Image (cartoon, rainbow, N blue to C red; front, side, top):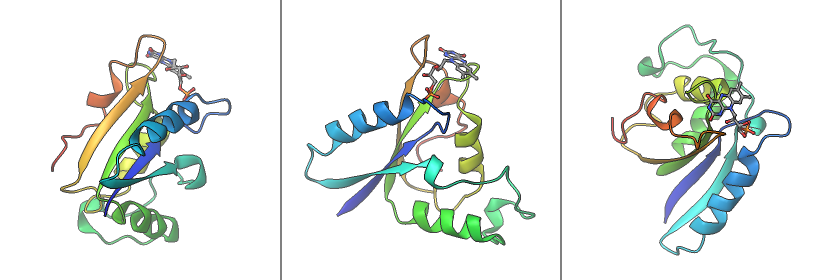
Length: 132
Ligand SMILES: Cc1cc2nc3c(=O)[nH]c(=O)nc-3n(C[C@H](O)[C@H](O)[C@H](O)COP(=O)(O)O)c2cc1C
């Protein structure tokens, strides 16, 4: 069965992302043609990118990178729940994206964004197209 990860894109204390992501999950599980799981960045703490080689090389050196790669690599697609921070996405989400490369490739992605101005900016500042 197709596995979709719903990424909670804020780790801020008191974050709204958790509530939004749980709502997304509740809508998604009404479908029966895929499974949906929450991926909470707060439970996958990553330092500011500290890999010496580009993610494109696939030569990950750090244990936290290898663990993150295993998590992301196990999904077929993603719904990224992102706040709008300064007309962009959150730093923690961008950092988590930048850590990996192959694990994201050729996978579908959808965005759910929110913020005081409606979350119009973040999805196109993640620097992604749905298929690499
Ligand atoms: C650092 C920071 C920057 C923000 N910048 C924007 C912004 O540019 N546009 C907007 O609509 N909301 C902005 N907001 C409001 C957030 O989108 C809103 O508080 C949202 O709930 C934050 O997500 P979170 O609670 O999951 O962390 C900003 C909030 C923070 C903390």
